[in-house]
Amino acid sequence: MDFFHSQETLTAAEWGMRAVVGYFFLLIAAKLLGQRSISQLRFLDFIIALILGNIIAHPLSDEHLSLTGSMISTTVLVILYILTSWLSLKWNVLKHFLDPAPLTLVKHGKMMMKNLRKARISVDHLFSELRKQQIEDIDKIALALWEPGGTISVFLETQYQPVTPKDMYIPTSSFSLVRPIIVEGTTNVNLLTQQGKNKMWLEAQIQAKQVNWKDVVLATIDDQDQIHVYTEAATAEQNERTPF
Image (cartoon, rainbow, N blue to C red):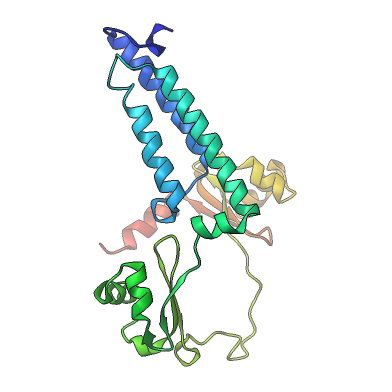
């Protein structure tokens, strides 16, 4: 365990052990911090990510630095992060500091230039974001908000919103989530249990469709326990029909 402490030199194996320990320790720390994509990082998340990366990187490249000290510092920062996140749920002042209210950029077709300057975004950037959402005319916008995460939420005026089946009084079936139950021969036993079924029931459903279990590449199940089976031959035939 000498690789944990500062050394004059480290062997190749000790450098490797530092990397392995640092990698898995950072995985655990990241798991405790919560899973967010880059676009979802809050101000506090961004600061913590920078600090943790800097703390762990130094002992992994400098043998004169102790890995133990970096791990202690990281643990303290993770505890502080969790404590701050918990306090932000209880203390509105801290909550509004870390997660400020969204800024109104456009309201009923009129741009709020003061809020645009406060968000530090240009009119060109605003229009670029609107084009990404297939909005070509600012007059169609009822409300556009600059969210704390850096994204723009846009709500169209009612006359420009897409027509739904409810508007046309068209009867619809209830929503049903389709999930993979078999992927390349591997059965999702947990999903079967959630559906209140077992593997014998699944095998019976596959046999009822006159499909050999070994030929099943993918099978899906919906909320109504309907099974859809895709075999290797059917998948190959579909790929041949798909134009490139």
